[in-house]
Every structure is written in structure tokens, then in C-alpha cells.
Image 1 (cartoon, rainbow, N blue to C red):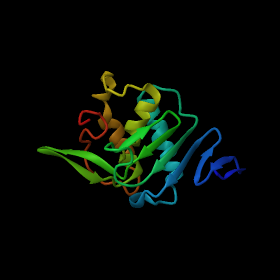
Image 2 (cartoon, rainbow, N blue to C red):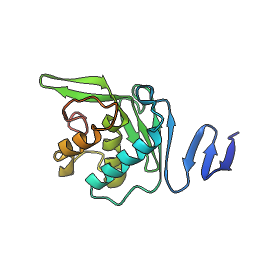
Image 3 (cartoon, helix red, strand yellow):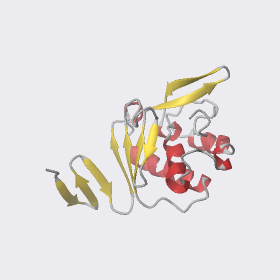
Image 4 (cartoon, rainbow, N blue to C red):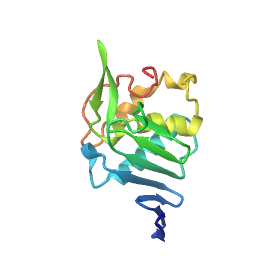
Length: 159
């Protein structure tokens, strides 16, 4: 039996809530439990949508937390919801390594927004390969983000 309620513009089923006509956030992204996680998530989603030359994302539920949240992947989505791991695949000059993302802005959320707005599960669209450094730099200027250069974490090459 599912618990269903509506309050304050949210629709809730059990522990998951979706804001009607907006972005909702749930889960426990341990490294990023800032009081402004909602606003930072919304900003990240909208900047990612701009990067993909898409209309703003009007409604999506984002679920944070854990290691691999989608089988062996660090993120996934079903068109209405996005699941995001606390980890990113970081490419050092000599190897790929799983690294705890220092902030929501450096998580796989940006990559998953790409799938949300263009689909392309095989990463064949050329936009996966270029233009990430500027967005990484802009998003990484947020408080609490590690000062590390972009490494290919969002482009889908390591898939």
C-alpha cells in the first residue's frame, strides 16, 4: 500500500516527492548536505540544459546518494527521474579512478541531464565530446567544490 499525499505543491508517494512543475530533490548526498542543495541542483540542471541547447527542464525528480545507483552506472534516468551517485569517474593523466564528487555541481547530474534532454544512450551525438571545460569551470566555482580541472567525467567516453 503506497502512502499518497499532496501538500505545499508537492505530490508524495511513500518517501519520494515531486514538486509539481519543478525540480525536486531527495536522498542523502553525504558529501554535499548543504542547506542550499535544492537551489544548487536546480541551477546545475538549468545550466546543463543550456549547454545541450535545450529548453529549461520544467519538471524532474532527482534522487541522490550511494555508490552506484543504477546497476554498474554512476547515474541514470527514466525521463521523469534522475538518479545520481556520490561518485564521479575522474580521468587522471594515467588512469580512470572513482572519486567522491566534492559538490553536486561536479556530480554526474550534468551528464544525466544530457540523456534527459537528447536521449542518445550510446553517446553518439558529437556534443558529448566537446565543450565541457567551460561549464565545469563555471559550476566548480560554487562554494565547496574542489578546484580540479575537468577530466572527461561527463563526456561518456569511459562508458
